[in-house]
Image (cartoon, rainbow, N blue to C red; front, side, top):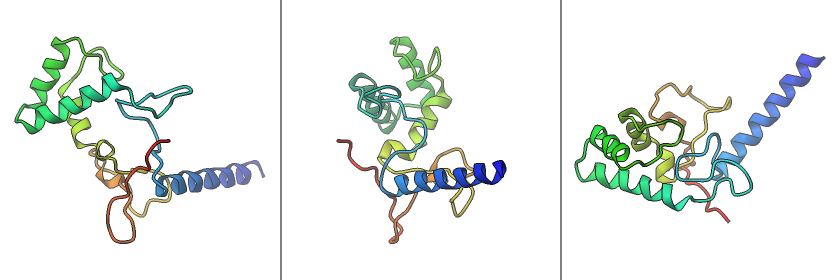
Length: 138
């Protein structure tokens, strides 16, 4: 009985998360550039958002991920959850579709398993095949 109850709860929670994702609400860990905990969770952190914009601009202007990480470390910019920036962190950020405002979801109700580390297998698409975009924060 306890196992069935636990499985029912897991299915119900998974459906709620999928529904929220399909409605444009971000699921999972909140990305660098937004408040990750507390009352203001999900709101923009202007200083971090400026770092994100700069990383993308530097990359688009031809800088390597290694040189971007090295510059962030030299300037004392704090990374999300480490002591220093690494080229791997920068590369993951550049490949993450959530930074383009797309909704990602890795829960049970995926049609295909999410296996690649670039985030694209996690993106949800609408009926016309367009990526779902995150709903604007209120």
